[in-house]
Picture (tube, rainbow, N blue to C red):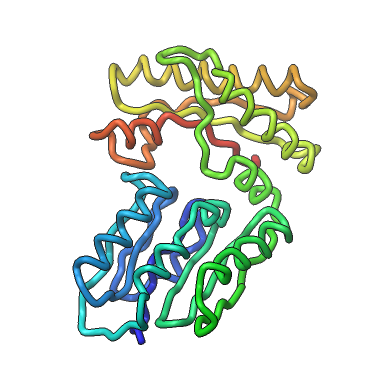
Length: 258
């Protein structure tokens, strides 16, 4: 059996640091931490490649060790099936694979999602595997917004504050989520990558946050409950040295005002 193989922790909405193995660093917001021990470099490479396919190159932090551990037959193939795109619907979470035991923890948006993720994981494994479903439905107002955004990026036209059709589609889903936290004030926060002048990025991020606020206010959300601010390039969630990382940093956040 594999010994304490913990493929990744999700820290997309904070709160997962207490689940990090002692030998691993704590994940930062937006990161996916891959930690634990696997039997060989090929298995490690395959796990990391799959995680990067699902979450993006820049978000995956490699803390995997290679050591003398035994694994069940075809274990690497089953792990690849477990690391499916639906896992992106989990926030504040952890997936632990220890030999033939798969444990899921974290928050999801609904009971249907909770059951589907665990069911899909079990369906991809053979009967010798056990799936422990520790997922829970998020009851927090911030969790409702995080689940609706689902780690996606609200898109704008390049260098502008004009929403793309894809960006408007995401905002329509966010508006539905906002109706569930009716009466709460929400901060709309814009971010950019680090290309160009800092002052220019600051202005663009502010303009984009204002555009999101205006769109939501024109579609039924009380504008008095929305605030808009731009953080420019000061708070990246990924490296700015690749196109993928820069794309992750060009984002909009929705935070329940404290």
